[in-house]
Length: 462
Image (cartoon, rainbow, N blue to C red; front, side, top):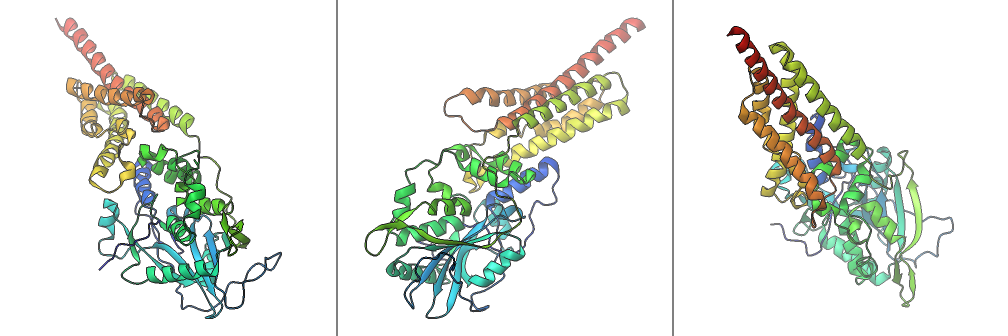
């Protein structure tokens, strides 16, 4: 039986390899699939265990503060940098507890799950992933990340012995079979927030007291965007699928859902020592391994100009192919039919995904205004538009549906000025709105030209 964990928490992945469920998708379809995957922040179990070896991590000898008394527990924050896979863009972290009496140094992390679980795919699609925590040999963990070329930092924490013992009791309790599982949430309950909350508990709420009322100045979309911006499809998938909740300004406490941001804030934090005097929480830092990847960007990519240009290009293609189709036979109409079908299929499938999430626990996708740009109504045009282009004259119903889709997209643009509607999705409006108008115009122009030609032909025959 799984017992609900009484500590809140979060889980971006530990070391290991796995395959993205959407790795074979292409174009916008790949973007949608990978975006859904990253919103689940998939991780894989660490390949090491606490029994692999005994190798205590030594503190940094260069300018190190006085060592703890003999036999005293020492606690470290271990932070891992970005990796190559989609679930590794956010980094990872763990709490290392070094016990000189037993000669052990264990890295406890909360980012474990198993693809082989019988209900994994179903839970993933429903947004009900079950993760767990466990402890692994700290030195073996570091080497695992070195093999992945991911940077590793170790920060010694200024916990009192009472706090260190309380933390050790908690993680050992949490690792018991009845306590280790928790329902994962990619923003409020993952590996990083679990580390944050464990420390805050033993510190008597000192961390939330320092960072809980201070605005970070941005929302979850900003933080995820800057960390995934160099992986184009991953970034676009997140940006497309993340709803308006991702744009709400968050506190620094909330933004600690990413391990790298958590470390930055803990470097600023202060706590009370055993004598009641304020001291920095992190009293010693060492980078155990420097990976070759560049540091994350400070801001997300600016894609609106690119998407606007792309939207205008698609619109121009519809207009040009529509003019060509009006003067051509069936073969000359095929390019317009193909473009209309592909565009409408992608837009319709995207809208269907945004609609179906309401039957899942993916709450961060709720209320997504991109459903106005990628409308399920476009699925009607995915079949109807190609058939209409290849017919002698496009049916009025098809043209009407095309203009309805364009009007819905236009409503998304108008809604940007309405109070309370503030999702930052201008790039997708810039892409979809011109394309929808271009398709509707092409179908209308094609019908008008054919009607004119029919009239002319009828007059000559008479």
